[in-house]
Image 1 (cartoon, rainbow, N blue to C red):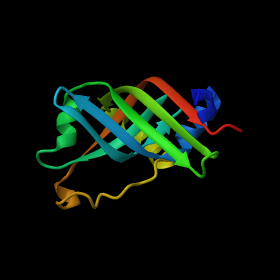
Image 2: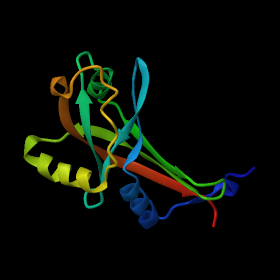
Image 3: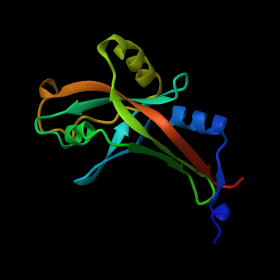
Image 4: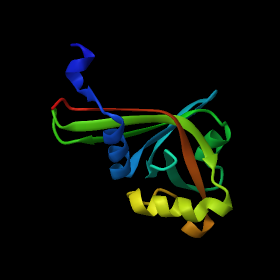
Amino acid sequence: MPLEEYGVAMDDDTLTEFLESQGLGTLALGSERGGYAFPVSYGYGRSRDRCIFQFAFGADSTKASFIEADNPVSLSVYEWESITEWRSAVVRGTLHQIPDSQTATAAGIFAAHAKIASLDVFQQPLEELDLEWYELRIDDKQGRQGAP
């Protein structure tokens, strides 16, 4: 079956609105050791075309070791209602820690657009986790949706 029968590409405005409205996705990180993907809350910042994350790191964090590898990352976001009513997007770019002087702006974007995932996955109290703000600087983004 040709790719065109599996939906249509989103235009830029539709893709931007979709990324702003979702707030949850799967972030995939890679290194020479392989890949690591995890569900993540995010806020999409339209003005600078970036995704904002607040990561929690425990001791010996796998996530931290993959972020330190400084490789390209991908964020996948989707919404599925039925076989004809669906939307998905893939955002590619690089992660950068947000300086303390810019965390208030980042937190505002995150608060406005993220859907908060639970921190219950960690085996230690929240006070023992390191919380840090990161941005995904977007190099490429694409979206598809069910054909109208």
